[in-house]
Amino acid sequence: MTAASTAYKNLHNQLLINTKQAVKKQNAQSLKKTLALLNYQRLNAIKSKDADKLIQINNDIKQANKDTEDPVVSVDPLLIEKLKLSETDKNIKHIQDIANFLSYQRTYQELIERYNPGLTMTQEDKVRKTANRVGLDLPEQK
Image 1 (cartoon, one colour):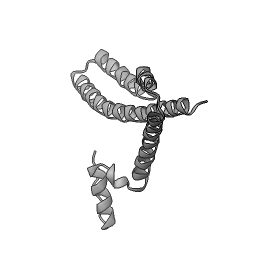
Image 2 (cartoon, one colour):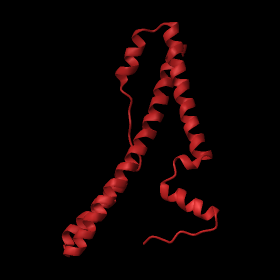
Image 3 (cartoon, rainbow, N blue to C red):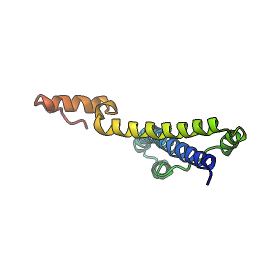
Image 4 (cartoon, rainbow, N blue to C red):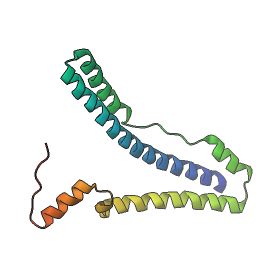
């Protein structure tokens, strides 16, 4: 395998990995909003005692959970083809640098999330941990 094909393959793999992670995060946020809406509709259906609508909403909730399990992503093949048109040593080195940057950036984000969880923590979790640090317990929300 030539250096160029290795560079393109590596770039393609890094783009797929990063895209899949981004789609997973977007799907998680979308699922949270969808479930909140469906739970609200379910409460309204319970209040109005509409059994058919309640069954439909419960099925929608199950379907929403299934849809976000493992996203299928792809990278536009035209992107790689356009890069191959101008195949010079300088461009190949640049593509290798881009692939390395994507890999290192992903690793950096994983390490930040692992060792500095305060950045991704919700406000409620921060308050709860701060209260625990000074010996207080927050009341449970129901």
